[in-house]
Amino acid sequence: MARVVRHVSVRDRWELVHGAPDPRLAAWVLGYCAYDERTGSFTRRRELPGEHVVAIVNLGAPVRVTLGGTSAAPALGFVSGLCDTYAVTETAGAQRGVQIDFTPVGAHVLTRVPAHELAGRVVDLEALFGAAGVRLHEALACAPGWAPRFELLDAFLLARLDDALSPVPSVTRALARLRASGGAVRVEALAGELGCSRRHLSARFREQVGVSPKLLARILRFQRALALAGTGPGWAEIAARCGYYDQAHMVRDFVQFSGSPPGELARRRLPDGGGVVGD
Image (cartoon, rainbow, N blue to C red; front, side, top):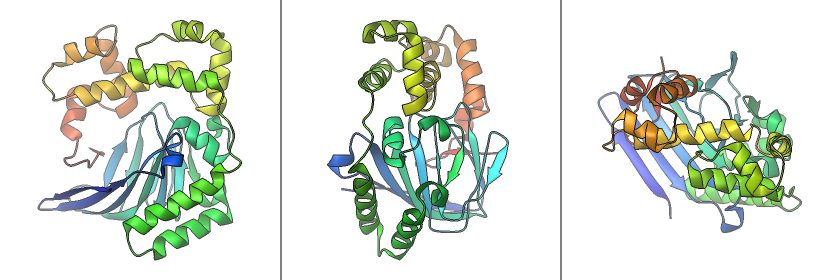
């Protein structure tokens, strides 16, 4: 069943429809989100790094994405891999489309591209999937509602799963351990638990996740700290809970991953799942 989040204020409104993928895709796809918004108080967002790879099928005007000094506005949509900093998206005050959140290994399996080729980049949907990506865009644009669109995404991704790549067991076990610890486990200890070298683990992560285990651990700690913001504990306690050496260490990660220290980032967050306002 879809979960719908709506926001209406004097100058802004948006609707987010969250849907789960077909159970056969559960290991590879975290979820779908159909969105439709009109904004008057801002046109730019900061898109923060997380543990998922994002694909956007754009059903409205092109959205400009700036990441790592490169700017693009793919007409049909794009895929963006894991990254060590935030991106900035900019609209003309309206956007509409569908977002797919892949697991890191899921993106590798379903795009059939080495994960490091997606990491830190915005890759055009048509360049990645070819004519099949164009047909998917056309079908989604013509679909009569969000439920049929989610079904179309299921069919498209299941077809790509037929001869999908198999993930390396050490990678899937390492990912599970990193998630369970919130990024607190040290990479040396993780490699020891798995019975492999740190070099071996990093090489497999580059191919199937796109970033190093150490960077993913930092991203997971940042995401955990962000989730705790505003829930009661102060920033020093949040830093301790999330495994940072001290609060200054946490602040450095916040600035790298979001462009702002924790307090400022908290003030930039939009209500009702709206994300983070850009400059």
